[in-house]
Length: 93
Image (cartoon, rainbow, N blue to C red; front, side):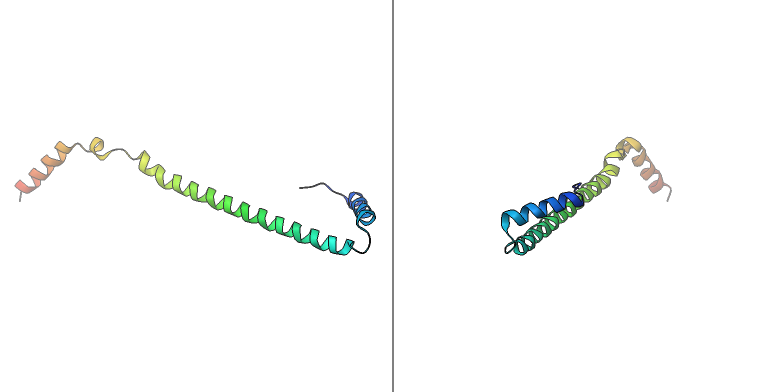
C-alpha cells in the first residue's frame, strides 16, 4: 500500500523523538499501533462484507437468469394440441 522504506521510517522516528520527547514516545508508538490495528481490522471487515454482497448479488443473478431465458410454455406447446392429446387419450381407453 505505502512504499515506505527503512530511511523514511528512521526519519519519521527521529522527528517524532524530537517533537514528542523520549518520555512520551513509547506511549505514542503503542497508541499509533493500536489505531493502525483497528484501521486494518475495519478495512478487512469492510472488504469481507463487500465480497459477501457481491457473491450474493452474483447468486441472485445466476438464479434469475434461467427463469428469464426459459421460453413461455404456451409458445412451445400450443394449448390446442394439449387438449386434443387429452381427448384422444381419454377416448382410447
